[in-house]
Length: 159
Image (tube, rainbow, N blue to C red; front, side):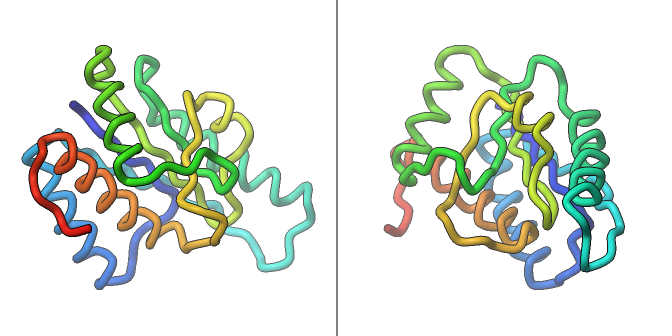
């Protein structure tokens, strides 16, 4: 299984880097992990709706350029489907069982994902209605994917 995580923006916070590195290392026992950061679009605080669309479109183009055509794309989106850890594990196991070998998770920037990225995605996943910084979301995602593999393999993991 090849898992790619495409995120917008460069991770700067040391504590998040350490957590992400730890879960990526743990995941390495179960899957090949690739992390891709695409540059975020610099924008002032007060953007018009048209300016927000331009920023999301440019970031979306960068994201789409990193996705292989035969990848199964899961976009993280607040309006996506919510799953328990067990449900996510069962879903990933089902994808692997039926021949999906490349999964790409996409985490957008501070403005979210452009519609073109959402249209390219095979599905949308939500971790709830709360808004989290996208850098923190990457850590949460890696932990949940790691937890999923532990569940799939029947290995113990704290509940």
